[in-house]
Image (cartoon, rainbow over all chains, first blue to last red; front, side):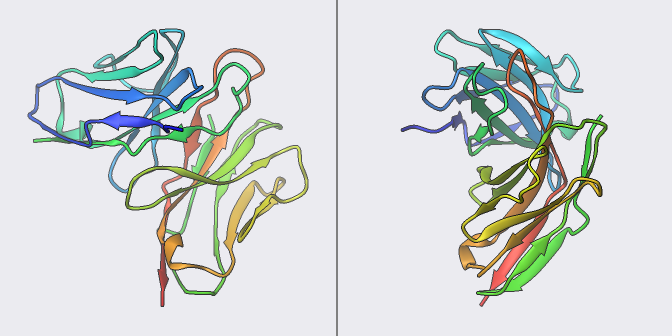
Length: 115
Length: 118
């Protein structure tokens, strides 16, 4: 049973560039959430996708956007990259709606470095 | 808004010994969920244990147990018979339950780095 998979594993970008991160949820899950984990910090909620729509959003600027595809996989896009966007980006999936209060299943993350 | 505080940036314990990681939180909710997640160097967040606020009994999972003090808003994790594989970052997390709509989001603390030594 495949868990949550994320790609790429590592990424280096320059300030001002755009980046796209990808996530495939665990088999049987249809809701995908994205978290940003800065160095030495706990993860912070960015947004969540279900039925190809953004359902919840954390305190992140519009430079952060996403998409969910019919197969439940998801992309996180960040435009006009800043040095402060350097972080580990974690994807988490959950079943819905029956699993709305279930623990999330996380991927191994994408390490983004902005230079 | 909910906040989660972990006041121990780093902890160290010898193999086979017991260690307790602290977590406090602030919320006005009466019903909620609390979690401990482990993040080893592989970076994946792994669920260790879960506690539902309406249950008075403390959750246990093999060598892991919690001390949930609702009035004090405290949620500590006890690891018994520590093993080298327990070396990791440990995050305490809060989740406000939802009765409708999509899955709930997690609010995390800043983590405690646990080192298990020989």
